[in-house]
Every structure is written in C-alpha cells, then in structure tokens.
Length: 310
Image 1: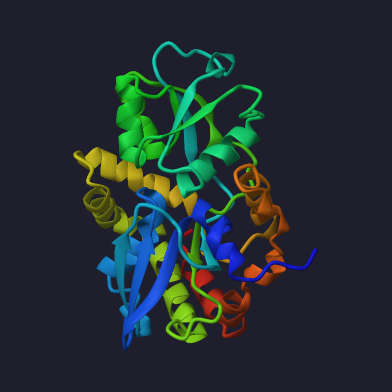
Image 2: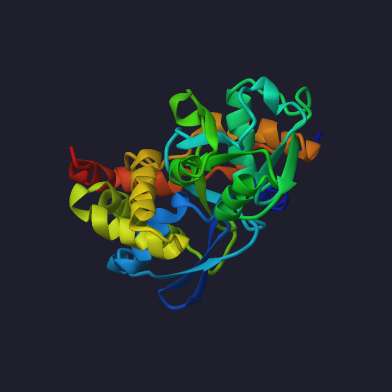
C-alpha cells in the first residue's frame, strides 16, 4: 500500500490530542488555539501572561477551541507521566464494578478521550470486554460535576480535579500517575508546508514554552503560577489553584520536549479503534525533530537544564 499523504495525519490522528496550533496573524504575532481545559495548558498561559514568548520575538495569543481538528505535530511539551486518577461516583467500589459503566470525556478522539484510553489501557481495562461507554459530557470541570451528580459513573481526572471530586464524596480507584505509562500529553502543531509559521517561529515558541516550564518549576513562583491557573481554569478557591499548580509541576517536571516515538505508537494503536486508517500513518513522515535538534545544537537546551530548580 502506498504511503498516505502527509496531510492525512491532520484529518485523523491529530483530532485525538490536546493540541497547540500556531498561525501567524501579523509580523511577530502568533495565534495559538488549544482544545484542552486543564493543567496541560499551563506553559501556554504562563508564557503569555509573563511575556516569555515576547522575549524571543513572538507575540503569542491563545484561543480555546472545542476540538482539536487542527494541523500537524512539530513539538511535544510534557513527559511520559499521566498525572491523573481514575475517579468514580459513590457506589462503585472496584474495577469489576466498572463493567457497563459510563466514562465522561470532552469529545471522542480528543485529548481527554486519549488520556482516558491510555489510562484504561495501562490498567488492563479493555473497553470492549468491560462494555465501557465513553460519553461526551464536556471539559474537565464539567466531567467532575457530572460525576458528582451521577450523570456519569467515572472519569480519568487530573490530580487537582480529582481532589475536588474526592472532597465531595467520590473515590479514587487508581493513581494513573504511579503507573509506567509512555505518553505525551501536549503537542504543538503546524502544517509542514505552512508559509505563515516558519521553523524560526516554531523555535521561538519552543524557547518560550521551555522558559515557561522553568518558571512553573521554580518554587519562588508557586503563588503566581497558582493564580494564573486559578484564573484560566476559572476555579473558585485558592486551594484549587494551588492544587492545579502542583499538578502542572508533576506533569512537566523537566524541560525535555523532544517527541517520544513510543508514545506516538501507543496513540496510533488506540486511535485505530475509531479510525482504522490511522494504522497506516508513517510516523517518520509526521514527526518533526528539527526544532529540538536546533535547540540542542545551539546550546539552548544545555543552558535551560542548568536553570531547573534542584
């Protein structure tokens, strides 16, 4: 079978990610759309509010979208840990009790769905065998509320929202973050042949994101990061903002932003369940390593690693 065109990836596999998409609007200005509404977006929010992208000549703006039907991967931020818990409503006591139950997700094929599928896969929970129902319910906050009101039976939630749910009487069946999961939660994307987003722009964005990660990891910035997350996630309590900041630190404990091929193979396998054509995607054709290679060769990464709080 002939290789699929490169653009095929943007219409299939990309829809499963919590994505960042960059499109130049004017000289030095970049609009970045994202589908996720949780701590994975912390580097973007921090980078914009603390002008860390402007430091590298890019005026970044962010726009939340309801889905991730956008462009191609060029850079991953995050690590191989899923800082989430499998949270269930009252009355569910064990994994076996999950048979035939409903899980809340934001969209089928979206980043939250993928995190849920990766988590269940790591726990050995076969969606078909257990007859699990993936129900489109809304963003993370909406899923948490639906869990507490009994509209769904379970959800795989970030630690911060998991704590909110547990305080209200829900229970945790598993700490996914303690499992050995190969996964990258957030990916920055653009068309390879885009005339509006150059390699230089992507490098500048990457530098801003890495600076944001260091800012998040610095204990001296804990309150400011918590305030930024509370504001952007529209959390009601300061303690929830602080919990979100801790979750962001757990999800992104370093500045290693290179794409992990094994994690993408896992994604391809899981997404094939809803679109068999994804199995035909040649990862070598869609994974771009030039951004990270440039940062390594220039010495930027070495310098940033020295700044990580010990």
